[in-house]
Image (cartoon, rainbow over the protein chains, first blue to last red):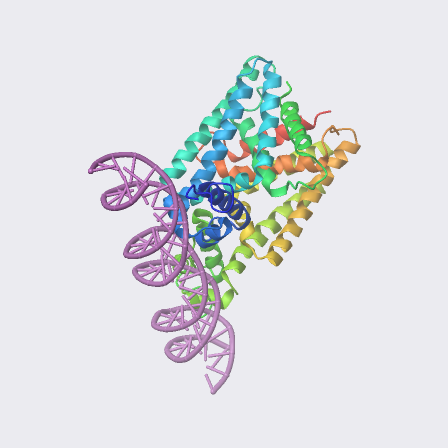
Length: 197
Length: 197
DNA sequence: GATCACATACCGACTGGTTAGTCTGCCGGG
DNA sequence: CCCGGCAGACTAACCAGTCGGTATGTGATC
C-alpha cells in the first residue's frame, strides 16, 4: 500500500485536486485553508506539500486542466469540415456545455484568477488569449465570407458571447427549468441571430 | 475641526468608502487589510469602527450604492415614453456605460459577492433580482408586442446581456480602441439584433 | 535470500507572521 | 463638562509553509 492511493482507490494528488476544486468554488481561494483541503482529501499537510509546491500551485493546476480541455474542444470544432455557420454554432454551444459540466472549475477560474502571482497570471492570460483568438478567427471568417454581419468588431462579439459563458456560474442551477443542452442551444442561437446580416 | 473632514475636505466615512472601493477592486476583499484601508483614507482603525460595524459592512455599502444607482437609472429608461425597442436599447446601453464608469464597483460586485455573510448576501440577491425582473419585463413586453423574437426565453436573454456587462471588468480598458459609448452602442446593438424576429 | 542503501510517500507538531476587531483614553466644541 | 470623533496599542485567532521523523518499497551485492 505505497501506491499513493490509501484506503480510497484514487491517487492522493487527484484527491487533493478534487477537494481543492470543490472548496475553492464553495468558499473562495483565500477562505479555504490548506488544512481544510487536506482534511477533505483524507491526508495531511505533509502529503500536499510532497506533491505540490504551494497552495497557489494547486490553483494553477485547476486552471491548466480546464484550459487544456476547452482549447482542445474548440480546436476540434473550429477545424471541422463544415460551413462556418455550423462550426461557430457548435463551438459556441460546446463551450457552454463544458462550462456547465465543470461549473466549479469555471467559477474558480473567473473569480480567483487575480489571486495568482503575476507570472502565473501572465501565463494563464496568454493561454486564455490564444483561446479568444481562435474563436475570433471563426467570427472573422464568417464576416469576410459575408455570412455574418460586420456591424460589430469581431473582438467585441467574442467578448459578448464569453460574457454570457462567464456569467453562467452566477445563475445556472442544475435543477433549473433548462437542461445544459437547452441553455447551450439558446445561447448559441442568440449569438448566431445577432450575427445575421 | 470636529466635522469629520480632517485635513481633506471630504467627510471621513466617504473617504473610507472610496479607499475601500479602490483597494477591494485592486487586490480583492480578502487580500485588503483593514489597516491598508484606514491608511489610504488617512485615518486609523478607531475611525473606521466608529462609522462601520465591520469590514463586511464596508463591502455591503459598496454594493448598496451601485445597486441603487443602476436601479434608478433603469427605472427612468424603462418608464420613459418611447417605443419598446428604443427603451430597451437605451436601457441596455446605459447599464454598460454606468458599469464602465464605475468599473471598480462592478469588479468588486461580481468577484466578491460570495464573501458576504448569508443574510447580507440574500439581501443583495433580492435587490439584484428586482433589477433583473424589471429588465426582463422590457424584453417580455417587446415579445408580446411581436417586436422581439420569442425564440429565446426572456430570462435567458437578460442573463445573456448581463453576462456581457459582468464581463466588462475583465477586458475593458479605458485606453483601448473603443470609447465607453461605442462599446455600449455595440453591445446594445448585438442584443437588439439577436431579438429581431 | 538476506542484508544494506536509498528513495518515495506521508505524518503532524511547530513557527513566524498576519489580521479583524476591541478598548482605553485624549481632544476640542457646544 | 460632556460627548461625538477619533487615535493607537493590544489580543486572540488563524494560517501557509517547514522540518524532523516513520514506514514501506526497490534494487544491488554477496
